[in-house]
Image 1: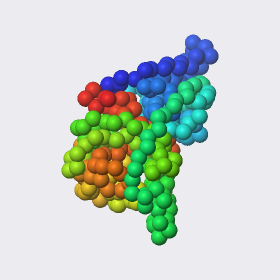
Image 2: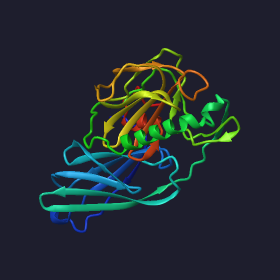
Image 3: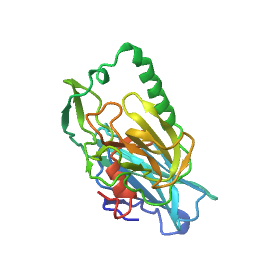
Image 4: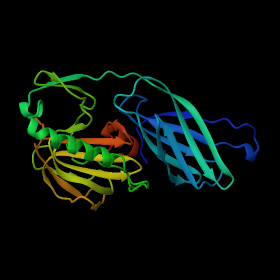
Length: 291
């Protein structure tokens, strides 16, 4: 697997050199330990394990096996995560019991730029008759993100959903029509209308419908808390509940929802963390996918 990431290695020292005292080790790969970034945590176990999980920022992620006594877990640092020191821990279950290892990681501060946009006033201050719809859609997404498949549903590297360049506006603080709004939690790709949008990786389609703010939207559950949201489509070519393979047609680029023009908005969730899709390509993508 290709990674253009800066690696931070955190090794757990063994209490003694005997096999009985051997402990798991942790290794963290990331572009940077900053808000909005994905980390891939590698756990090497001293022996065969029945299950491995990683915990950080109050969230636990299951790890998948990638080699002999080697496991990996995707851990997100949320867009709004405060800078500071945090505990990173791994729990390894084996026939002899459960062993743990933990270390401290330092999240560095990051300042995001501000963008000023003009959009339809109805998308800045929605009329009362659509507020119930917005609340219902927010509840839908909250429930979807809370119920990811516990297994990894992908095996191949992640790929770009469109061939065009990304305008990495992730994390930008947005001012719509002069009013501050939530930060931009996705990455925009400068794709013309009608461009084919492909699934970034395998998984299951959990949302495929028109949403007020994001327009025609598809959400794919890749498992282990990892989700892709593809928004503003002009056409949706999948159905909720469908299994989907990497590279399969999801729909076409459009300009539905709150937009200023045609483009693809790709947002990624890793657990509860909103992370930059470009960090996913860097950590979990192949050489051609890395930005």
